[in-house]
Length: 150
Length: 158
Image (cartoon, rainbow over all chains, first blue to last red; front, side):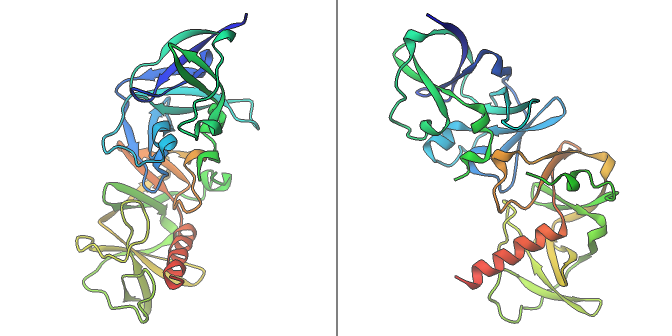
């Protein structure tokens, strides 16, 4: 039975996503966010991290296809991922509703993706059950690519 | 993604920063013909595009546009915007209303290309940066002109 550490990323009180242990670089509770005019609804802000401006993706907005909340969500996770054409790590931020939580996941927890929101299928690589709730494991390379631009 | 040549274009020594509400839009200073204060605009000849009016400057007529808070052309003139940046691209003489303008040295800002997840086809700018704690958006006359032309065509075709 294989085990691996993962980070649970709360998107709201109902939805969580998960990423690998080494994909979470930092968690910031009071991030300064800058609105970007004309940017897509799920990615309307950038944050500063190590002298770079990183996109802040609000998965909740994208999953539900809704407009972002008027108030900013200053809780963000800085994540690292590899783009297919590049060996160097890339960084992007995810908007969260609460602090990430590290968990140990084993193969027995594998489960089917939740039927809704249907868009999980476009970004999830697998799914596991955590306290009777399905938690999709997301592919950060897809999340921060142009694949979510409908 | 941004083209490498734009980010690393060291021929750009400084930018003209146009204040548009809460945002700053930067164009290479060399591409701005003039920034003038406007009193009154003449109506456009046909009125079938997004231009909010015209003005005469140095014996030429310039079509004047306004952008909304998402940097999209709007036919609504903002009465508070009394400045206008004039620029040319491919023989087209255009102007963009702004609240104010200033000059920013290229060395004063560090820019980042727009991330792929943010880069919609109609996004006006190709890079962002910070200047004095404010987000700045970098574009050029060609991209701005293309946006205005597309917008005019959308209006003309209903």
